[in-house]
Length: 297
View 1 (tube, rainbow, N blue to C red):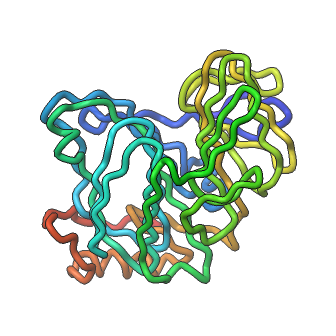
View 2 (tube, rainbow, N blue to C red):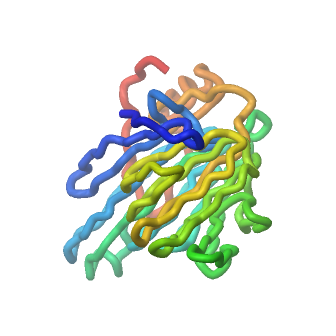
């Protein structure tokens, strides 16, 4: 679905909501109208969902190639485990960055403490396609706590940078191409201004309402911004948005299941390797998600 847009906005995407057993997800990227924003090839809003005691999320081990996953929570906790031996709780305001490169397997589950008490879970998970020179890089995992992320306090807004560079800040986790992902809180009546530092940019509105060039936007919208334009987002009420984007990569990327690549053949080979059990497993988490039937890539 697309909406009429003001001059500084190229496109507005309203992602459909899906229910995954009581846990709602909105997938803003990829969309028919826009496959990528900079290197961001996938964007899911997870929740918000309120889990009773004894419940939580259980994403069984599954493989990735050719991408980096960025997990950023607003509420709750997730336990990340992967085939490198990493085991890391991520809490609200922290960053997990997993670089799949030539191949990695991971699981995401609610940790025991969260599962015992229950609570609210919400956040974003993004996939950043890797540039050609890094598609087959060695897999790695990084975690940066909330206190390690650089902050900017402005007139009516506060910003925390999760990856990349923006407003003279640089995040501590590695990025393979110029990009940015910033969590921005805007107070009622406050304004956040995004300068045209990067080639391809968007806002994802998490909560509240913002006005851009006279048009009002509601939560759950991916607002793709016009290249080269300075864009001011004014909060009509307390609002939270994520600003993201970066340089456009060298060419298109194919996305099938959990795999991203510049080559269809590489994706077919990765699926065959998963089916044949050639990926390393996740220690302590022997379950796995079977590969779906191969469809058109």
